[in-house]
Image (tube, rainbow, N blue to C red; front, side):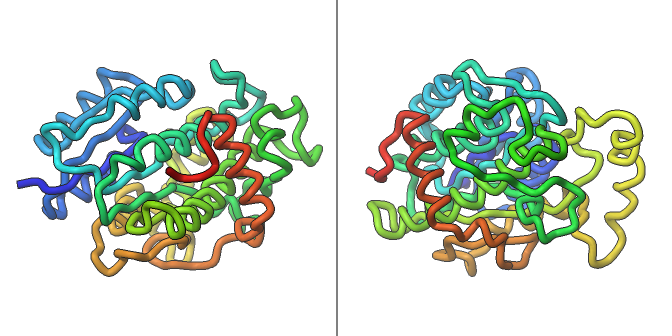
Length: 308
């Protein structure tokens, strides 16, 4: 008999699917709702996960679609919603793309859409509840990820960037990705503060770094030698000790723990790399950046900065 529901965005991809699989395999009475952009794909994926999984279509590139999804989301016939995993994400290697709302797509999909989804679902979450934002160690310029350092200016600038890289060097698309991951960590921390002092103190908010997972769809736009290395070379490094390079299954098991482990109940405002809670980047603790991001982003998605 299932007793709790978890919503996982991007559940058709490697990490989201494996996390859903790990939660269901733990046999702790969970129903898993996964989302994806393609209705047929997400429904087929849910069928493969079994009778305790449900697939729902969700396009994070449209804020109106996110609103409609959240407002129609119902656990009628399902256990109460106890957890949300904000996992879906995109990386645009080069160029600038805008959503139907006119926002830069990486910032909109990886950050704004998930903020809106969580804000709309919070009033319907059961307690104790958990929210997890899937971030990345690429948000931290001190980590040897091979990715350009984030360049957080203001949330308004990130929503409507100029065509050039914020720092004038390096590929804009990849830098926007690392900056969006910084936004995920800033949001996880600020939400934790807001929840702790607001009307939902029994709901926690944490950020999770799955490490580098080569071969997954995140690098689908890589070309040439970079694409070849992503698909063929880097996966072999998952067996090398000490590297933050993992298979999706290994990272998913660590992600599922943030939802399942009773020892983590009440733990909030943390950053987990795999199974370890560690310090995140210096910028992720910048309260001025966090306040700007929280206030501006909520305004952009039509929410009050105060939880209600």
